Length: 91
Image (cartoon, rainbow, N blue to C red; front, side, top):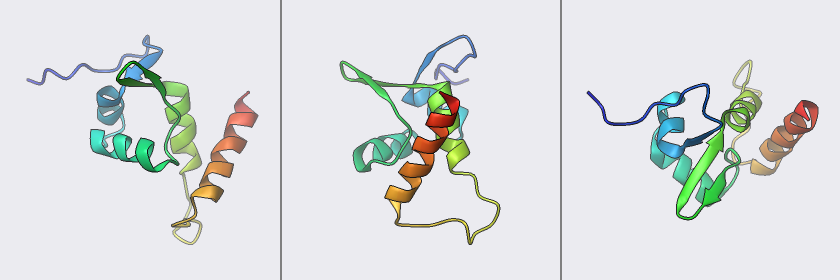
């Protein structure tokens, strides 16, 4: 049995550990994206980072592709523009 807390729909802010579990990614992936940029928006409180489900959903929706020719590697500026566009539509 794991001691890792699980994210519940009632929680507005979730930790990087909960986000990693929820999206089947490693905590390291979230840490790397915060360091290099281009990842989901987060909030920093003290030494902890928090994510909202809405921001995570927007980020991963913007990363959706229909085929590999749509996927563009090494172009973080274009990916950020796509994410910003989805935020504007949601607002």
